[in-house]
Image 1: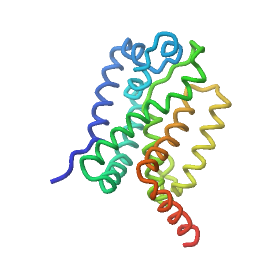
Image 2: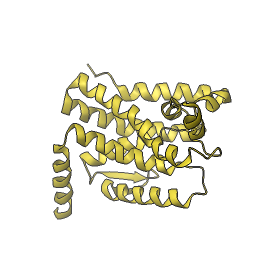
Image 3: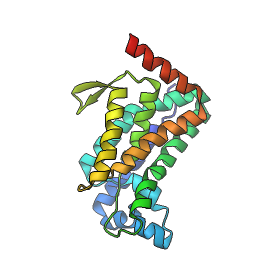
Image 4: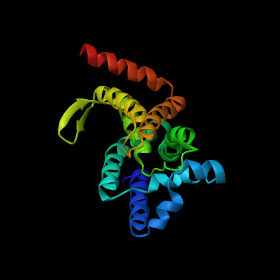
Length: 210
């Protein structure tokens, strides 16, 4: 009997909420990450609710495909490390808290900027992907689904690009959320199971020497 999949539940719930918001734009206004309203009116629920909204079908499908692809593996990893029930609970806690933490950077940066708002699960999905890289740094990721690149190299490039793009600005992508979500996912997992750091280092150097 296959185990209950929290990843699939999150994917389905996110798709339902996002689809409903596609047809009812007021939901995006009410639940998007909007630092000015969070700071001035205390609407901090937005830092979580925004992670279940998306700007269109492509945005939604890309995020949910990546979450499904890597989340199932990370969820299994948590279950092996912490047991079935506790593993699922910790995995869900990681994901939900990652949505929030990914938004903290832009909250601090834009809390006086009424022109900034964001939606999407990308920050939390970045956290999931980076936990996958933590487990197996030399596993191949496929850029645009075609170009193979080792996870550790993709991860370093992703963090560099997210930092650079955040400073550059000029687009509608919340690069800060990607950066902080990725870092937080790894930090959350290492705090729960510090020995994974040595597992990561051993695998990293084994791949270099291999």
